[in-house]
Length: 145
Image 1 (cartoon, helix red, strand yellow):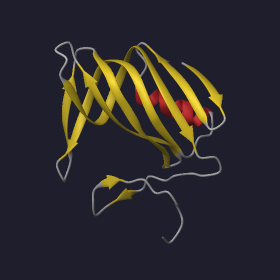
Image 2 (cartoon, helix red, strand yellow):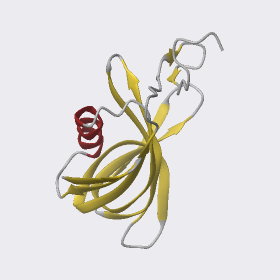
Image 3 (cartoon, helix red, strand yellow):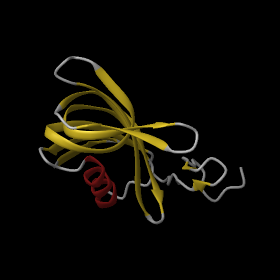
C-alpha cells in the first residue's frame, strides 16, 4: 500500500491480493482518521461479495472472477473503538455487464486507486440501530440530536 496526503485528501494505492476492508481500516487506524469519505476508487477486484438489503438482511451476490471497478465510494467512521468502513461499488466483468451494491468484502486484483477525504477534528460513529438492524452513520456521536 502507498498513501500520500495533500491537505484533507489522501490518494491511496492498494496492491494485488490485499483485502480492501482490512487495508482501508488499517490505513484509517494508522493515520488516525475518525471521520472520512471514500470519494472514489478504480482498479480491479479478484473477487468480491455484494449485498442487497431486503429490509431484514443483506442478500449476498458473490463475484468469483476478476471484475473492473467502475465506481467505489463510502464512509469511514468508528465503531466499537475501531475504524468502520462502509462501501458501495459497481464493477464490470468480462461480459461488460455491471454488478453493484453494498460491498460486503473484496480482494484487490492488480491494484485499487482510492481517494479519501478527511474531516479533521471529527469522529463519525456507526452505532447499531436496533429498529433497523443496521449500523448507521452518526455524524455527531454523543449528541442528543
